[in-house]
Length: 325
Image 1 (cartoon, helix red, strand yellow):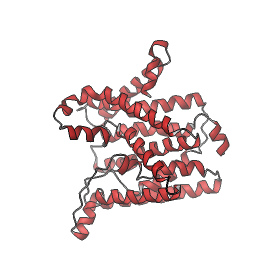
Image 2 (tube, rainbow, N blue to C red):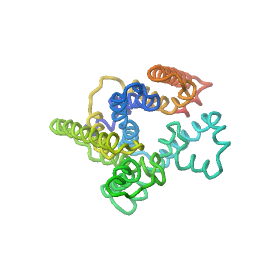
Image 3 (cartoon, rainbow, N blue to C red):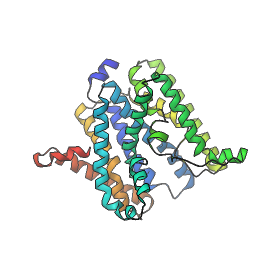
């Protein structure tokens, strides 16, 4: 029920899903199925849910808890600055060769990579949503976001298909993985709000959502197969079918009754955040292992780092580590 969920400090099913998504994100970067084209392609489609799910969950908790926008943005910016400083020694040699314009673009548009783009994208996405809501209602904002997603697909993923059919060449201007072209376009910021504000639990509705999720996944498979194998697109970030997939998947997940306490659920949430933000360190350290060894090594190291940070942050002299998550 809406009231019961709003009164809880956590949603176990969402927090478990976020941890799984964080681990799958490591899979995106380590390609554990790289030895087989079909397995790699199938895994790639599944992992398209990861970042959108994080965005929806973040937005959902923001709206259902009725939090202050300034506090949310402050937290995201704090995490972004702190983790950018942590990654700086690894980025130094790259940054040294970059012109100032590229450095500014890297930090204030692309989100500095290392999965940190999610933090910067969240800030930009929320700002866009709040500015638009000053002039139009939330449902119209969602429609605008869908339109921007279509534009994003046209200029990136769908570009080879459009060129093949019309001979009109489209360049991926402004990039694809950022607040404007990803966080806001997937509708996730608005989607989280719509889900939070219109929450109704019905068993019959859940069955319908399960069917719609299956249909959406089928559409994603068709969209991906057509563009990857037939039109041979090289940009595989924006997929339009991920939008309904994310919506129906999130709607199903958030209502699953998982018998764990809020304390455990919040611990899993902290783990997912730290694994997502910190695994880039081990991507650099263990680069070259290849396939499963690479994946397992990064997951294991990220998990150990995560548990260590959470445990130390409970101690008096290491309480500052809470700012890492």
